[in-house]
Amino acid sequence: MSDDCIFCKIVNKDINASIVYEDDKVIGFKDLHPVSPTHILFIPKKHIKSIDHLEEGDSAIVAAILLGISKYAKQIGISENGYRVVSNIGKYGGQTVFHLHFHLLGGRAHSWPPG
Ligand code: 5GP
Ligand code: ZN
Image (cartoon, rainbow, N blue to C red; front, top):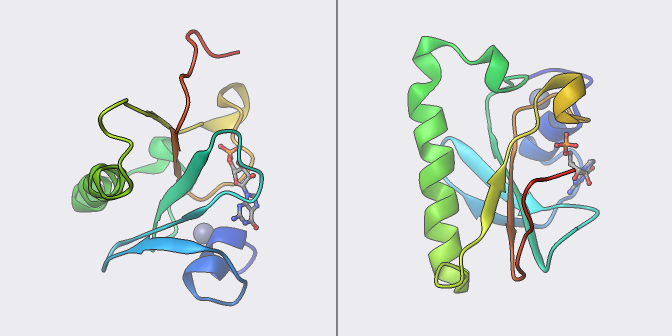
């Protein structure tokens, strides 16, 4: 838990979010400014700043996030057409919230390479 972290506040239900997925390690909630018809942020309940700040002991958390994404994508029916998972890291990655999160983007085709 980091006191000044907006995503920790969402984990602790101190601020509202549309939570669509939850297990013991992970929550998934709707992005405030969606860029795709499906735009969900999957985050660990533990405060970790980014992929670059992962420690050896965090491997079960990362697995839980990716499995959660996969389960949720099947549940809402976007698996067949496919979807994109993105995690931005630091300045060049375009990260704006410094609590690890994976964007699940679905419901339309996504081009490559990204901007
Ligand atoms: P980043 O740019 O760090 O990869 O992504 C941060 C994402 O968090 C952005 O897509 C932004 O719209 C979303 N976001 C920022 N603040 C909030 C918030 O308070 N609630 C929700 N639901 N999403 C947020
Ligand atoms: Zn946090």
